[in-house]
Amino acid sequence: MFSLYLVVFIGLTGVGIIIPLFPFFGEQVGASPAEITMLMAVFALGQFVAAPIWGWWSDRVGRKPVFIITLAGSAVAYLMLGLAETVPALLVSRLVGGLMAGNIPVAFAAASDVTSGEDRSKIMGRVGAAFSLGFIFGPAIGGLLAGPEPQASNFLVIAMLAAGLCLFAVIVTIIFFKETHPRERRSAKPVSLRLISLKGAGRYLTLPVLGALIGVNFIFVAGASMMDSTFALYAFKEHGFGPSDIGFLFTYMGVVMAIVQGGTIGPLTKKFGDAKVLRAGLFVYITGLGLMVVATGLYSVLLSLTFLTVGNALFVPSSSSLASQHAPGAEQGAALGVFQAAGNLGRVLTPAFSGVIFATYGTTAPFVVAIVLISPTLLLIALAIRQAAVVSVEPSS
Image (cartoon, rainbow, N blue to C red; front, top):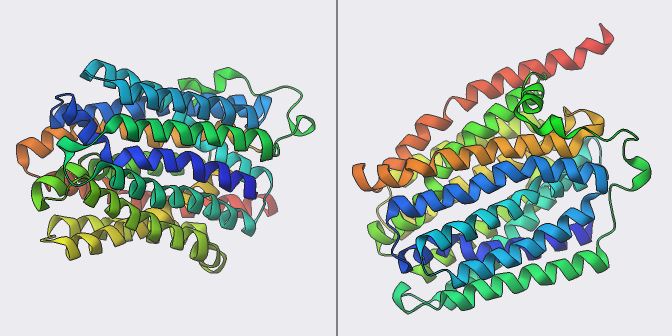
């Protein structure tokens, strides 16, 4: 599993370099706040389209080839990003990047391949921690390179570094990653591509527990994307934080997330179960959004980010673990791809208008909308827990 953690860490370090600085890439080519958040939506659109396909394909050919192709494609996307001089060029680079970033469910499927029972949440938490470590080093590196003033930043160098890290991850994958889904474990009749169509995704929505979890993931990520897509703009315009400041804020979030996912998610899920940890994560995240609305300076922003990060760190591995537990056995990659795609659809929808809300109603308005969107998921999770209890007793009835 160490090779999987390493591949995820290196790949996400490249992502982490770009994410907190992307609004400044957009401003450099003359994009407005609304256009910047739309560009983020285009990235998520690529993930939404690609995640089920990569998951389906990894069920057929294995996880390793998918990692190699998507990491190499990400390197190309970062090169395009660094060379972009217009909004349309930036759009194309973000679309390609999103298509290649649709490999996230493959990482969780690889973890699911080699784990079962209580160990699954722990291992998925460690995969999440590898993601988080990428967001510790990536934003710190990007912030150092960008400096305090956006106008003086060399974004081509930053994008080239991200591309280089992706190519390094390709090399690590080829040399060290051992296939977790070998040929003999693949179905003799591979899952049909039709299962990742809208009709196929609808089939997963009708399954007990899994359908509710897909809905929760969609709503949670849609709400969280209101914050994610406007936070850098908010921090810059409301508190005067420059690229390096924002990079280090993301690094702080990565540290908190790595601690939670790497050290506490296993014991928490073992003691309380995935469903209760998931519900706690939602509550903590909503609290963090409320704190962001009333934040007045650096320390209050850090407090809010702590709650937001802990909530997200509890949500991601516990929801992924529950989804894998209730997915059809031969369709782990495809089912998790649909689960991930639901979140990516949320990332497409809300950033499409979060910039308009930001510009029209104020810098904290997107956070208020996020609270309204995410709060109903607490009820949906309660229904999912009830479904899980019913399903668990059915075989003995």
